[in-house]
Picture 1 (cartoon, one colour):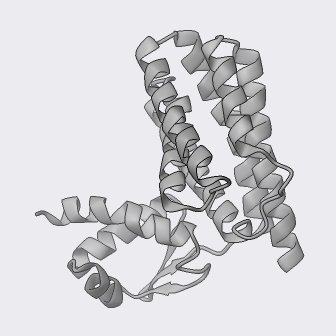
Picture 2 (cartoon, rainbow, N blue to C red):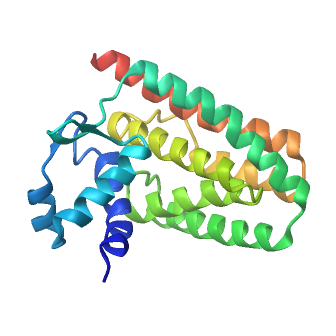
Length: 220
């Protein structure tokens, strides 16, 4: 298997460890230790970290390797502001395209996400829920079929999720019904009510960003 292929497979694994806080902010990432842990070559690790650097999750240091990007209130506020602008824009285009295949795929993912929530109760941070939740959000905007916009939105979503998972893993506001928020967005999409769907998505992302920002500020 080529170095590039191995690195491509390694990227989401490392990104998830950064997003869930297993690799804490500002942690030095040692290539040899990562290579041994994942059973891959140093060149594969380096290539994966270069990809994560371009996505904003790690930072390269001259002659000193890589380090996990710090978290900050300013960065989270910027990420949230950009998400609430670009994701609704992508969703509006997706709805206007009226692509039935996209709608059917989205409903299928929503059903899977809802089943997890109904079976396990309130389950953010459970691995299966995290995977379905990410797939749901990216599929929602994926219907716009604009590769550059989707790449940007995907990076913003993952950055936002990092803050959510680090700072809200024990303090998600109990008054929020995230499952109901998802259901309301889907309902508006299927009715092709772009104005309502986009406003609901904007509010949904803003609530998460605001809650994480409040928690971050309380801890610093």
